[in-house]
Length: 135
Length: 325
Image (cartoon, each protein chain N blue to C red):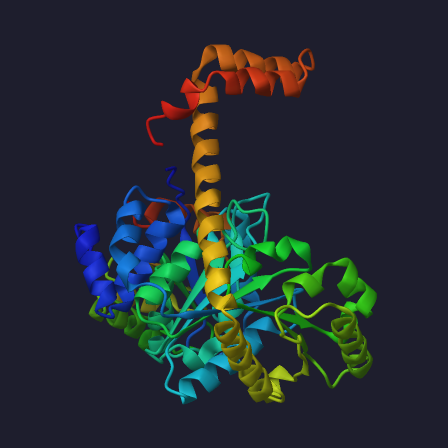
């Protein structure tokens, strides 16, 4: 039987933040790059995001936050995924994130941050190169 | 996680581990070599779940209705599995799966397992692997399985050949009942729902559907109910939930449930054979120079496809010697 490999990505907006233009643009771009994108909507708790990521067995979780709460919410998602054994999921983030916050986010397991001005082509390439290779 | 054997994964899934279930679903979706073994192992645990198909045009409110029905099932203490299908783009092969947006209230309930699926290679509304995923949810002990698919008519035969009860969701904007007749939805629906019933034209559509239902011969004593709902407010959802239960009971009492499931199992085997034989044949065509020459002749317009097909099929050996079949 032929094995069909598709990168599955969960895009989520944690916390109290109603700005979803960016995440929607990205969702369409990733779909057009041949990925299966699961969008879960606004105002998600880290617990909801982790549970959805587990059930959907995604390769990548993309978090978008424009409210300033990224330092709390992003690491919490990583923690919850690890606690449930999903430590091989690639977690990346985007939004209004000050340069000075990036080192700590990376230290806490968010593997890349794409701030304002990041190009969609770069995000797609990053995911294609870094999504975990599964059987 | 990567080193876990199929046996271990299946054991964990049967014991209720959501991550093992999620992993097995991915294997079935990809068509991994382990799939026959997975299916063989879960086979004894199958047949307990009841599968409800929810179909209708895009934007009819299927996800919201599924969300509300799930709420009612959970109130009764039933566990729920949801398969939410959205189309794969035929151009990029990607998909945007957005049904979860309407189901957020259930994300943290361990009694609800939601899986978004893209249609991938299928031409109808259901991915070819959906039946396998339903089996996994059944084996994992889900009492009720909702399969939500986009459909606008007879392309939805897939769901009829898979679900125990089929709910067709329409909206007033969908046009008059003649459209419904044209689309062949009468043959598909066990229950009609006119959602967004607060909108203009809802009553007229309901009336027309009822008329249509009464003109149609009853199937084994079941009269297709025509219900009105306003999903976000939950209006009419309890009646819909009750109608699904009533249909289930009617199927059981008339012996139709067993008959449907027999037909579904037969169809599944035939589809599986068709899929595998075609894949084997295509693989063989690509390797065999003589056969490939025939394909090229057809491509160039020098040989008619009927003669070529006959010649290719004459070499039956080709069918059985594919390494993967």
